[in-house]
Image 1 (spheres, one colour):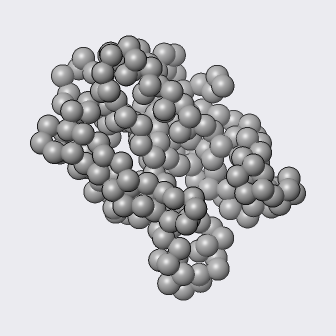
Image 2: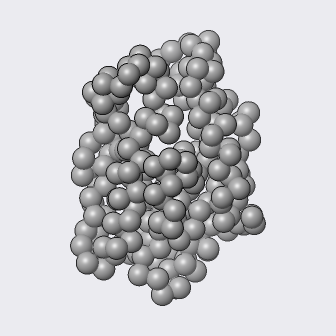
Length: 218
């Protein structure tokens, strides 16, 4: 693994590679800042090129719905552990990533979103036009390959890992939980211990699969 000093320049160079569409996986711990960084890099690429040639997408739209979790053998545990690998539609995620590669010059691809108001995914929330030549997909498990996640093997042109320390990422996550959910620091800490810390260990185990490590300079 190597450290990537200038992600934006690397993305610009990728656009010159001749590949019809470049699809990159960005993984990192909960609270690492994956969506913020992906959106920042993509915006910089579009500004430099002068066209909307790149997009950032997230995994949130592949959460299993609350109704699906409620049908699991232990619905209470499923809802409590939402965000663990088995609470996502890994097969659906792999199909969509493959569609981004196969339909690069043929058709638009529609990507699901996530509504925090209902707490459920929203189908076809985002359109990736056929003209888009660079897609960065960020999420906890973009580099995870156990079980159905193994269907992602070979789907990405590159895998990146946002190399944030666990202590820093979980501290940021604690603050985010407080702000988003309006809960106390103690309640946020309990949420992390019951779910996020477990997920962070799984994500950390995927670090070795990355082609590039990205230093946390936030």
